Figure 1: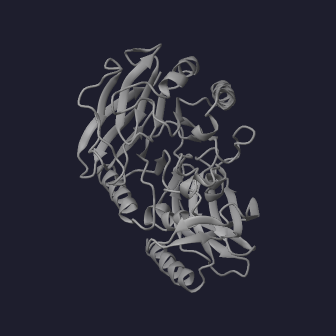
Figure 2: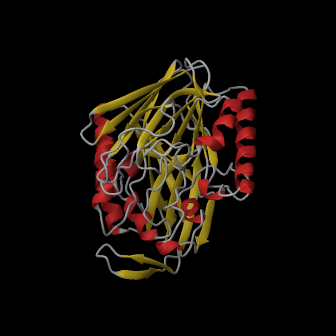
Figure 3: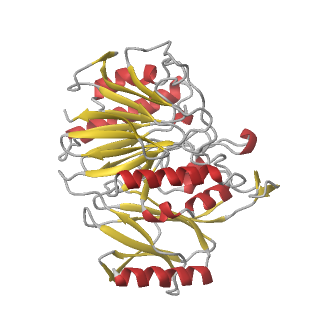
Length: 423
């Protein structure tokens, strides 16, 4: 522990003196037991990742960027400074990403970005690999906090909420976000500001593209390239969606991340559905099939205001067909969840999918709900919102017997729990 503290302090000093990289985030690798992806932006070529076991930080390894390309994605886009002043962002940088492979399952690692001359270019970051098969793990699920530098309280509320999840479960291994983490994904300064928050240096974050992450100010430009180039996720998505849609394995669960912005018409939806069928079927037929399949998208399954069917109507038959265990979403800013559903009906949990959508977490952009459900009273078991000032997130614990999801409010109060049985 003493060596770790010294390494952290030294790296902080070097990074203050030589800050030429930014927007560093740890993303999942395709198999998080032995891989993670690291994403960063550099002002010039010639950087790499230096990493080591947290328990033995002197034994260093190095990984060169798999991707090291000049990025113009965020150039010449209208935005706002933290003081509210209008300006045009003109960032051009070297987009870097690499996969750290051959890692040990269930192990804590440290890393930092280095220059080719051997000097550190960042502070020290950490992550934990997924455990070996059969071991329990946990994560925090959060979404819709719309980082916006003129209103820093939004992200502060979300980070405080993550702290409440940590108090509830001090052993959480990583963070899953379900989109809309930036108010305008086209504003590079918003991503840079977001990734400076301490929880981004402490955990691996797996996320997906939300409609706000997909847009610039005033919808002047809308593209999933914003999400792609602010992160470095596995390039195993379907054509045109590499680096945006992806799947990864964490312990005994397979996660499949979808992009609603490419499913606005039947052609886009069919492409996503075909890919989902293929990757889930291949995984189930593989030598190490997942115990759970979890599908994530940004748009809500139900309208939390009145219970009206939303994306559930699009996906439920396909999820039934594929045996999806858990479906997660955000966007609606109202928490809503079902018990296990199959063929439009509730089951005893031995067949079907549990649907859960997160509340907002920014203490600003929530919404009210009707006191009584108008639709799907037989399917929706619990809803939660605090109105416009809503903050909430979930703790998820997973073992070989069940997935347990617990909704917490801003005070850490336990509001709701649902279990997904292993089948």
